[in-house]
Length: 120
Image (cartoon, rainbow, N blue to C red; front, side):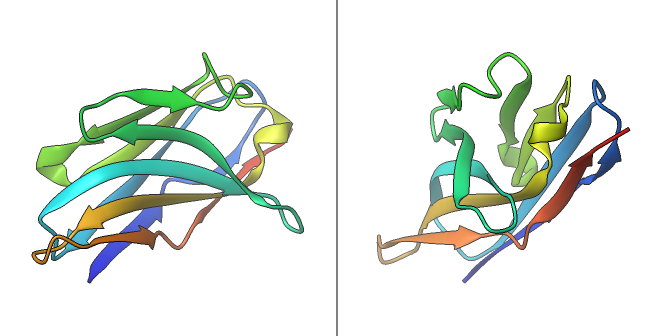
């Protein structure tokens, strides 16, 4: 079993910054990849950014140049640095990851989500 705990959301003015974190704990052998999603009430959960085991990243076009995904393997933590925030970035942000257990099986786990509100 693996647990992901999201944190770092809050209320910020347009143009401001926030850094989200996702702390991973539990029993796993390796991490395949990790991602940040966001969801607005009543809409689908959309991929924002992803990072592979080797550190290759990709981003949704709407956040390119403003958001940066990173991971600290020593701390088992995933980050999302969000700069130049816009009102349309308002959403609940979720981290997820694909983890390999001792049997070699890959499972996907989700964090509980953290609310980001961009408003003046």
